[in-house]
Image 1 (spheres, rainbow, N blue to C red):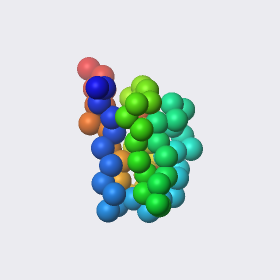
Image 2: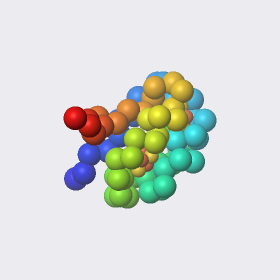
Image 3: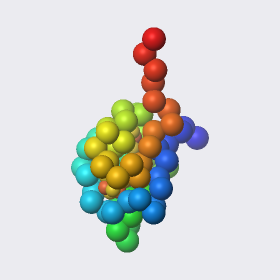
Image 4: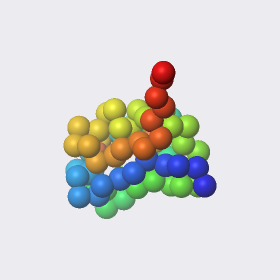
Length: 66
Ligand code: SF4
Ligand code: SF4
């Protein structure tokens, strides 16, 4: 399975910003916490991490430009 963003549910306030920016529809808010549908394609854009103000969602696969 492809790597997906990591979620810390304790930090997520359910604002939904990450859901709004995810163009792959890989994210959803369930009971006020973001969840990832691992069956949906994530193209590792890291937009969800960039938009999250609480640091609840992180992308361990960030591409390092050398
Ligand atoms: S942007 Fe951050 S705080 Fe808001 S729903 Fe997504 S993970 Fe949770
Ligand atoms: S890295 Fe991009 S495609 Fe993957 S869940 Fe986050 S916003 Fe969606």
